[in-house]
Image (tube, rainbow over all chains, first blue to last red):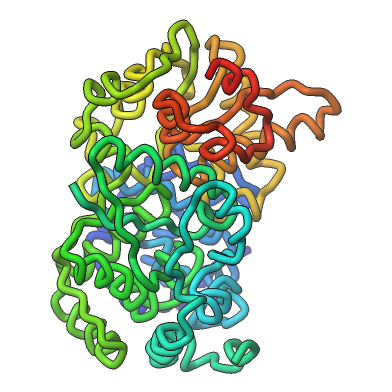
Length: 170
Length: 294
């Protein structure tokens, strides 16, 4: 694929990750070495993502699913010699992709909106009892608190701009 | 000491026996645990941290405020919760503008975040507050002659300036020393510091490659050590290192991988004399080879 650099969005980095340190990336590849998801198919190549952001390759980046295969181990952030904070960059790219194309929005956010967690916490009372565990003060079991939590989230961009996704369990 | 114990979601929902181990062992070692009343998702990196800044840090702020109102630091076992709560605390502490914006969102809920509570990992508490010596003094059964390996949770190591409690994140020792305090011999091997591969999207987006990644680690454990158990201190490491052995066995059509996996507090609880049916009841790979010693 031929890339037209003249047509690229030179301010993309400001939209995605407004951090001057990003420009200190010198392509060393330390972020890839030791990255579990660099073994993926397609591989997560953090250095390449940094390049795409710096060069403003908007279309290519929007179609790139690899930021979502990150394990969040954060080894890249520890090892990066130029303090680019590659894991923060990955989360920033995910945020930009979710805002640009709602199909990227993970379904876990709907679960968290509905019941406070991605997992069904606090419903396994019989098992917990058998293991000698107390009842957990979950938000799921406290409707008043859950209502306040939802009202707070309703004011945040992901929910206010995509509210149709969050209306199922009212 | 008193700490506000943030249980996360996987532990109470899927592996409550590990939660039971923590709730039994910590108070017996002088660490009293309180509950964050009405806590929510940490938030997991695959949720609000992947959508927008406001929902991410409002959710972190909600959780942090629950410990702050108790005047206590937070204790976490789950690596992802530990890392995400730390990221929330770090950003809200450093960026006053962000904190003001998040407090505006929190205000109608009656909450406020002031970044006064620290976020600490259970390994940090056990190693730096309780200490291996006190643990050795408080156990009834020892794992003398039993070999094991430790799986360090990545989220407790990196980035060390934010989450670290080890002298060197490249050569962590806490989990090893804590396991040795139980009398066990901890073997070293070439892939000791490699991620379990279980967190985040990797195992979902590239299942075959993720299986191969962790298989390499398990093969190194089998070929290079005498490990009879794997000890972890992160709910994802626990569920993943256990579950993938069963998955690989099914793929191979034979039982190749049979190393029982324990959360550290589960081994500790067993050594302290607590009932295995309560503190180590749930696993994919049978734990009898270790449990029968108690």
